Amino acid sequence: MHSTIVWMIIGMGIVTYIPRMLPLVVFHNVKLPPFLQGVLKNVPYATLGALIVPGIFFIHEDIWFGILGFLSAFIAAWLGANVILVVLTSVAVLSIYAILI
Image 1 (cartoon, rainbow, N blue to C red):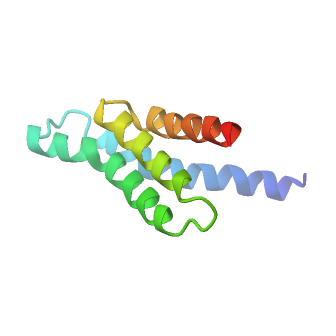
Image 2 (image 1 turned 60 degrees about the horizontal axis):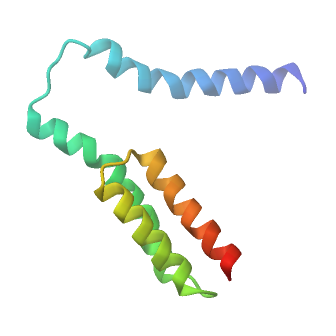
């Protein structure tokens, strides 16, 4: 790999890291109201839902992949799993379904 590409990757990493790090550094002493904490806690699930739900309606081969993926993700999120576990649960259920078919 050329050194230009390596420096470009490092630069892109820094550029994406700074906006994520700055709020933690600047606002580390700020206590958010409980309502706002609750709203921000649910943003990843809302984003995940916005990505998954439209895909369910556009599956052409087997609609059950969409339905089972949605239901497994919904149940895992309802039980309080974090976003990574919600995605992994859905992937595991669909992998098992694909093997059984």
